[in-house]
Amino acid sequence: MIATKTKPESKAARSRSKPVISSEIRRLQKNKKLSPAELGELARQLPEAKTKAEVARLRDAIMRGFYGTL
Figure (cartoon, rainbow, N blue to C red):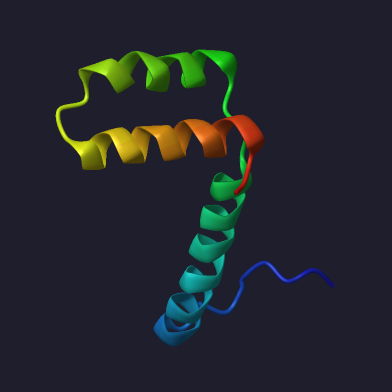
């Protein structure tokens, strides 16, 4: 016999699963290498950066995007 209805998930169960999923997505994104086009777009933004913090953020993003993780 095949069940046609499933028991609805409780709100507590859904909220517990979200942080695990989002942390896994963040981990995968952090380790992801960027395409040449994506790296080029970051490099194009670098000379236009207005603050030292923005320059540091872009340089970090380029390094992480090139090597995958640092």
